[in-house]
Length: 123
View 1 (cartoon, one colour):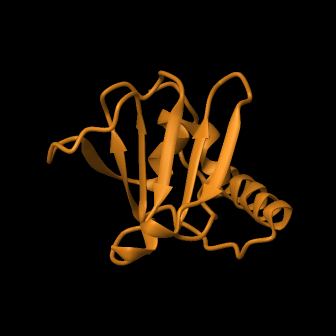
View 2 (spheres, rainbow, N blue to C red):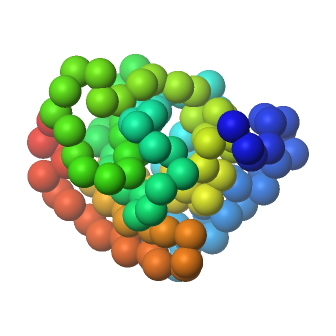
């Protein structure tokens, strides 16, 4: 783990970034609380591109994050608290305020692709 440990100040910074992104895209900000669970593929948390999608939140945040090829195996995603993304991949935190149905592809070179995939709402 190479990022910043959790504290409320650095989480608040990303909340501001989330709200700015949602305003730019003209969508509702739907926060992800720091202690809510996300599914993170631990195969390689440092490779590019980085993918994310959000299902409707339930007992977890709805977020699933991965690099490389998608895998349907039961152990592809590890549940972690959203706050631990500060350590693994802080660049994804500004996207965690997007509502359910959104997909994201980003990389370390500034590539950003964000789109609504309504099929994610049907789970």
